[in-house]
Image (cartoon, rainbow, N blue to C red; front, side, top):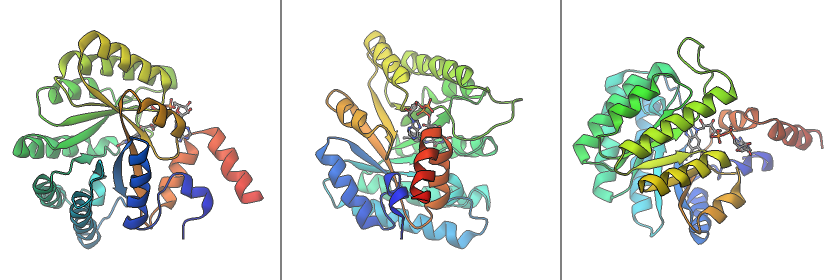
Length: 277
Ligand code: FAD
């Protein structure tokens, strides 16, 4: 049972509650990115089981009229077991998704997984001529080159600031430097991509920049935000833009909840107050 305090960020333990949440988002003209919580399986059976669950979820989404897609962590479908296991499960999921016409996103985990994730994305998006997206992180120095690599490929690219603490040797440190990197990468994407840009940020300054870059270059873009963060802004932006909400669900909600709380002091105060009261 998910405690009330975590329900701000997690749609429930079961697919049915996540789809009910998606229905409510649909009424606000916000699309849904469904994420079954789970990561870092070091054995194949749980990775295969979650890949099976994603295949069923894709069929269930296709049977609705909802504007919904899925987003998957590579280590949830086998990357910590072997690259081959990850690629096999991903191919199975994207095959099913292509048949059902449901979009599949790949989340990006820490820097040790970037090459394997981008290689898998490239193979799948070429195989299906799109229908697949990948996340890249502005805090990593390598992302400048990765964005150039991704520009000519079909599919979509979500730019985020980056949620993992990365070593100073390979990653920009400090909020201002990461924000500058985000701006630079976004500008490159609007300049070089024909389509498929996703702005994965709650930061009003980055949304504003995307608007300006769109006005300058004309490239279409979507805005993606997390469930429980700037919900009112999501609804307001949906009047004028293509807005999607990332909606995690499932029994493994605890570590996701801690990450969201740790991201922001105000959330920590909110969490502590709820525990103390
Ligand atoms: P920030 O500068 O952190 O925040 C800007 C403003 O947004 C804050 O001032 C505050 O008002 C609000 N805000 C931000 N976070 C919170 C919060 N937790 N609670 C309440 N308010 C908040 N990271 C990855 O490394 N890999 C991924 O695959 C990935 N996928 C993502 C998918 C989506 C759709 C989104 C929105 C984020 C994803 N992230 C991912 C997380 C991302 O890297 C950042 O950690 C996170 O989005 C916070 O950065 P920000 O751009 O919102 O800007």
